Length: 222
Length: 223
Image (cartoon, rainbow over all chains, first blue to last red; front, side, top):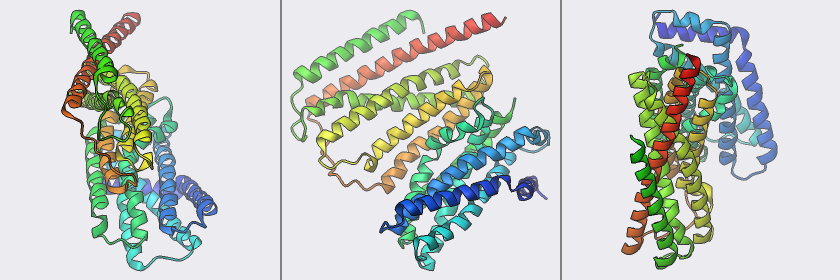
């Protein structure tokens, strides 16, 4: 088993046992969806409202969940033990990014269908497939930025409270592109019509993890 | 840089500001192709402020890269990054306020959130604010330099891409103005740009000196 796969399996196993972050984020997501439905349910444009509610949810879940997952490793001394292993620091970052993205994706899998059903009427299968691709690219970008920023916040006095502050300016491009593309995709836009947004998110999904892979060592040392 | 150099920069910056203020109100003719020719005069302050806020951001990011690459023990690059961020925050707020004031007069149905430049300035202000809040929350100077530098590099991905993303997704429902200036007004804008840049350079030089003095004092007290 490669170190990366072992680390992902380790993170996933801890989460599967405690369900500490998953349950909290899922309930938070449902709360946001229900309040969104109550406030905006009568609105004509289901796609626009759904895109807004989903991404408000993911941004909140990201800020809370990424911080929590990292704080757990700090508090239990897991991080110190992991740093003692003869593996690339970047691999630690990438493993944590993948589990963080998986966590948000899991919430998305529950939240998006639930919200679409509650809001009335599922869009056609093609629109759902396009939306799924948009959500996947956006969620990975959010997790890539959120994971290293949670590590930075964890090394400060303010700890978790700093995550949303740091996340906003860094994750803004992926949020702008994802909200816009989700709305368009739910409205039935083709992949070609979303080429701009998709390539921007793809670029972000490559650039941020690449830079973070290089810099993660400087965040966790000392 | 010696103290004399900083003073010359500061005097040059202030003098050019006086020239800009006098010229923009007393000499410059109305910009004919604008709906609100009087309010257009805010250009001579708005455009250079936005320019300085971008330059300061580039300086902070570049100094962050230097801090990370050199693992700078003297923390010289870190002082430049932090000082430039403080000045950049000030000028980006000025740029946002002056821009919103102007656009209210110039456009009939303006919506700020449909303007990619507004979103970019908001992202820039958020990045500066987050950078400074992050610094304030770390006590150890070496660790503060490292963490702030990593954030500075990440913000340098976030802010320019915010501009691209909002260019893709916002669809302005206000008529794009003819922002071309007559040549003599362009010259005045050029003078203002140079003046603001010199002012930024002098403020940066002074702020870095203060930061260096603070570092020296802290080390003296510790030893």
